[in-house]
Length: 135
Image 1 (cartoon, rainbow, N blue to C red):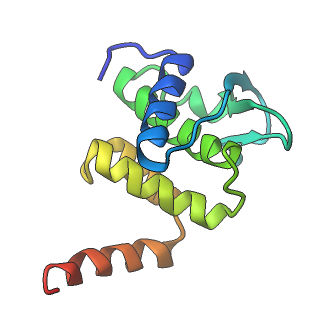
Image 2 (tube, rainbow, N blue to C red; image 1 turned 60 degrees about the vertical axis):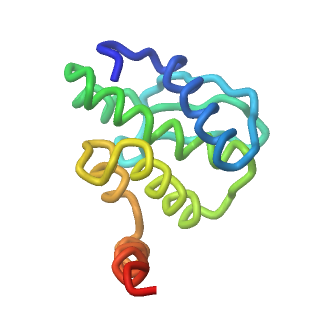
C-alpha cells in the first residue's frame, strides 16, 4: 500500500477495480464533510459526489495503512451505489467480496468491511466458501 493515499487516488483505484469486476464506470468525486458519526458516507441521488464523514475518519487518519483501507471500503461502498446498485444489503455483500479478494481476509480492510455487512450474509458467505471445497 502507498504510504499516503489521497481520497482521489483511492477513488481511481476503486474505479479501476469496479470496472474490472463489473464492467461499469462512473464519474465521481470525493468530498469530506461532518455529519452524524453513525453514517460513514453517502451519495445524494442524482449527484456524483461521494461524501465521506470526516468525524469517524479522523480516528484512523493518523495510520496510513488503516486510513487507506478505511477510505477504500467507504469509497467502494458509495461508488457501488453511484453506479446504480441501490440495495444496501447487496452493496455491503459486494464490498466484502471485493475487499476480501483484493486485500485478503486477514486485512484491516476486510475486518472493517465485515463489520458493516449483515451478519447473516457473512455466515452465508463463510458457509459457501466452506462447502465449495466439497463440490
